[in-house]
Image (cartoon, rainbow, N blue to C red):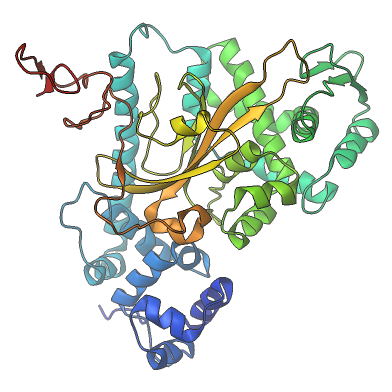
Length: 466
């Protein structure tokens, strides 16, 4: 079979325009001459497999989305699976291109098998943690069941996201403000609004149609609570359909999922998918600028970035989590290969723990997990006021990060030495399932390893991991 020749002049010019690069700058990134790039951009020469590989690594989002056909989409997925640390010697670019071109059905089965392997690994990790954690025997609690549902759904609900986006587009640009949401609640849904601090953060009387909001909350939180109620009423049927299809076991689980989906829809309403994704890429995912542009909180912007996984317009694959003062992970999602501990806290070497103690300051970190994958993390400590002296403010930290290959899209990676062999913090998932035998910060031995104790020798920890 004669290999298909791929001409991509329009795509290359689009990439240069998106990243404001001169021909010489793009040529340098691709390790080719400027004249060669000029020929490629004018479709005088086709791309070679080696160049396709370099483009996909240098501009993963752009190369995946700019007019890619079935063959290019298949090759991109094959390249991602081939890059798994599972393979000690992955195939080179030319081999992958031939495989994708000459054996498309087999390539797609390989991709599907790798995805099944990855999912099985995640499920096995869930089981390992459940067995290793104390006091977790018996069925999953409702909040654990809902948490796992969102994780296995990829933290993206297409039908709900598109419905909320369409509503957000109608209500405001770039994001519906408080006045627009209040107007829709009053005019279209016949809801009367009461601002009072006597009924919790938000209380809705369905019989009377009264919505009470605590005025002591920050303006971004008040707006989010309004958006939550709008979604719960205007998108009730769409949300109920998702809950029904989830097949959760208990009434409490289904109710929690309904609340979680209302929150999801509120985020999609305030930060409509395509507008938010485009704005995020334009500012290289600068959270403060996004929060200001869309009138949302720092945490809300971080959380929304972790949901941008629409099939035809994916965002950067991020992980996101929220950690309280005791180190408990109270929110988490990952579209990356990094998966958070389901029980207890995260690795003590991860910078999010330091951020909890230093509010309103952004910390960054280059970290490496035991499988050799590197990540760029951003963490910020936050204090959410209660609006009253007799209620303590909430203190926690949020973290957002991506794999190092996306560092050029993440402003917080600027200044980090991504190539240094010693600059990355050697983190794990949690002590109970971390295989590192030489960690000085270990709180517990790994649950699947034997330990040895020498009464006459004492290191940082009183045992050695077998």
